[in-house]
Figure 1 (cartoon, rainbow over the protein chains, first blue to last red):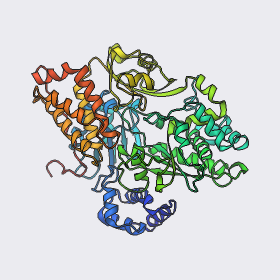
Figure 2: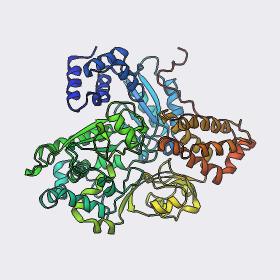
Figure 3: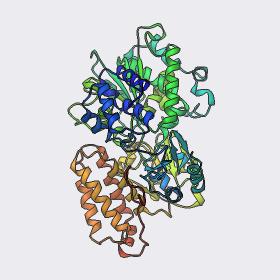
Length: 154
Length: 427
């Protein structure tokens, strides 16, 4: 399921650490980079590449919120909802984005375009209310700017 | 004149050339040429530097616990900045990544470490790009790698990504995560990371800002450092006009910090502020002139924590804020210990009920009892972070809770927090 390239990257990650299991999170993220999420087959493949029991890999993967063990859309939008953003209008931003996309935070649009997540502090309270779209940070966001941002995602 | 933030806004500070032109890596050169590892550690000890991650433990003492002659030792950098309201480490990593690299090299030299791991939270995408570039440049220039600057000191630095877990900021949970496990805290005492840390080897664990202080201390000396304040980064956010990281002498008051952050939005009055992230007890307007330093805040039952000052104006609904804070700890609890796993759920349920207009008069006593039962009983500081907010709510803002219970305030809906993978509407 994983490309040759991803497999060799994961082997290289393994060599960076004195203990193979330390490469687990980087390896899962590498798999996710390729597939968008980490389906059960990919968990098994990572387990094989790192010589770990698949149970261990699944147990670890399910603990971390940014390892997606469920399918996600082409774009992942993380809206901060913690206190500093809350005080700066994050609830209205979230409400308007949910309304525009027709989904609640935690869900993916039926066309598979966007997954919306309500997340905790992104350590960017100087840009509150803030969001991360895929790997890019945005803020401070007005509700209008946030709606435009998600509308323009291909 | 600022120290830690002096060059973060210079566009070329991220590059080796810019950093070196402004005096970068001079401290490392000087240390490797003129000072023994013990002398570097002694400078840091004399600077009275205290950890900037949240616990405020003296850095020199922390280093002194590491066994001198252990064959394998590690340095682990806590770059998992996640305490709500805190954004100083991100500012340093993005604006001056070589300062962190130089701090890492000095700390490694002082402690006889030859492998360092930077545990960087996943959400620092930009920070990771910049830090990895700085590390690569430092290798190329001979500030990292084998035989640094022609000496027999060698150091490898590995940037390691987190994957979304606030608890990984707790130092022993961070080590578990770095070992590729669930980020659940380890029992301590008896074994602190300095003695038994990563892979059960002695491990120096320091926060980003802490390490960024070290080049300055080595270059200019501990007396100079102390005379500068010592410099402290306060992340000021919330209802201020220009939320930002403010560098100010340790012990600056909230009133001055709010002023430095452009004053209050709309000219409104302060109702409350968290002095050290949401794990600290929020204070009220009457504490605006309290010096924000460890001792003064401890006296008030609060703490400096990560020095994240979250400012709330007179229009703030404190019940809503405290409910959001408790909900955060509920969702981030690792589930290892009962008081935290259960307590955070119960507390949030009660607060939600109050906000929804279904609160009962006896709920306030129940919250008080839960706060007492979660104090000193949790396995790690995460669960212990809930009672300070509850206490402040019950003691300083009780009337707001009572207003909801009496029906004198419009009920508020707390948006549902769905897990990833919940079915889409209509499908």
